[in-house]
Image (cartoon, helix red, strand yellow):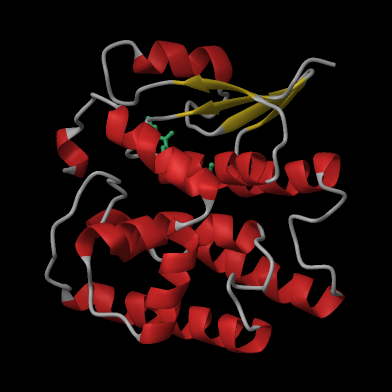
Length: 213
Ligand SMILES: N[C@@H](CCC(=O)N[C@@H](CS)C(=O)NCC(=O)O)C(=O)O
């Protein structure tokens, strides 16, 4: 079978695309990549070629199409990592899946008000709607890191870290006041070679999407 093909959006803006890309790259899974710059003339036509939801990311592997970031991560873990995308212990695996799902279905204020913009460096006021979400993320990070001892949420790098990588980049851009544990976690994440590679590619992109600036 051909190498899997991951279709992604702009590296500067597409937070959902980052998650499975980071997993594949961190674990050195061979894959091909198609980047579709979003919200340009022609973007929809390009998306329609690859994605039944007209959204990215989508993974193509043989005849299989998986148009959802978390489902792609699950598939990658099962197909190429012998399950190493998640912690080995059953209880930790359940916890890791819960924090990943919490990210996948929650934190809507953070996503809407602070969209990922890797190149942005500008201290932002923390609007009241963001306060409980930022507090919950820090609580969750703190609990996971206290139990695992770090440097990643469940000790070893896992899908849970991929799910929170866009939050790390949002906080890096907007610089809210964060506790020591969160800052240490962000530091560890920002040093992950695959994330360094994504950030460099985002910095090299030329598209500017006004809606996310
Ligand atoms: N639940 C999906 C959401 C994907 C999503 O919303 N992707 C955005 C980009 S980050 C998108 O493709 N937007 C293009 C559009 O809405 O036209 C996932 O987890 O992959």
